[in-house]
Image 1 (cartoon, one colour):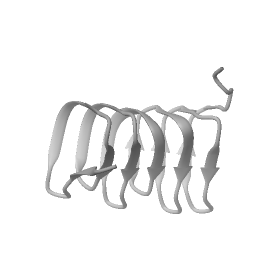
Image 2: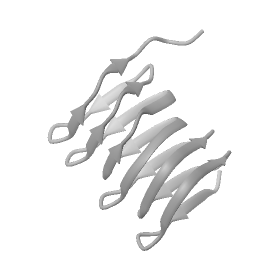
Image 3: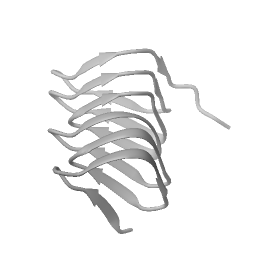
Length: 106
């Protein structure tokens, strides 16, 4: 599956939706809804809710994260918001403030 990349100098204010994977290196304010994986790279800054197949955060996110498969918070990442996913990985050094819901949808 192809990936869409939001470059480090790009600022998006609005909603992003699609079937592809999404790699974020820049800034997004709004909503992200993709069927694939969302990767928030180190240095990226999001004020957005994310709904995806999987979410990997290495940067900063202020907003709720929802993933059908898994959410991963890498070392040095920052998340302020609620996480909903059947599998969650929080690495040592990650910063997280919010609630966790690991209920499997069936």
